Amino acid sequence: MADRLYLSLWYPNFRLEALPAALAGVLRQFAQVGAKRVSAASAYPINFTEPPTYQRIYVEPPPTNFDPTVPIDPSADSSDELIDAAVAEATEQLHDDMAYEFEMRWQLWIPEGQDPTFSPLGLASSRDEDDADPDLDAPDSAWRLRAHTVRILGFGPSFDVAGYEQNGHLLVDFGIDSPWVPNPPLATPALQTPEDEALDETAQIHIQQNVEKLLAFTLLVEKNCGISSRLLWTESGKPLAEKLIARLQRVH
Image (cartoon, rainbow, N blue to C red; front, side, top):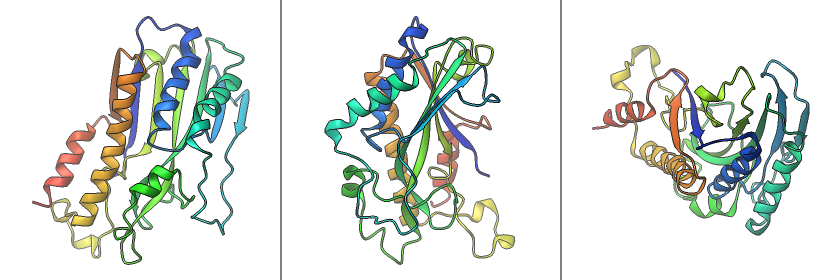
């Protein structure tokens, strides 16, 4: 069953005035493993049931007949300036009862046809193009690189009754966890049991690559963003590591 994956971040002696810099810092770390610019930004008052008071789309979805050879990002040299500008504009009206959300994209391996939230949006960056293995992404492979949206949120201390005490001063929403613990389609699902679901070698390689990208971002944040603590967690409360181990052990 699909679960949702989050990364909560806490900062020492955190104040509202530090929120824009904290957001920019995390977005910059994400740009090292994913897209180099913000796709969209929003500001929500009070809680998420309220409509946003600010919203801007920076990267429009590509047309159906997109050209996958054309990167969706500018050069890496301009990424910090673009991120800083997006954060400054969204947080211009900084209030303690607001949440600020930024969307960015990265490319992850996903089984073909498994998850409709993944779409072929082209190359997210030259890094993804360099990392892609043409043999594993060959026409006869069931796995494809797909662009996926990640939401990075910063909370004012009074937003949603001080929800950041539980969710973090900043929260990274990675979306559903299928790229890391996928449930591959089964030829005869009615006859299969969980113990029968085994990952082939190609699936193991792609899951490992997805996990490495997730860990690389997490470690970059821990090293460069001055956080006091972090927590990688799932919506169901089941630890991601436990799910990964259970999945990978089935092939042995």
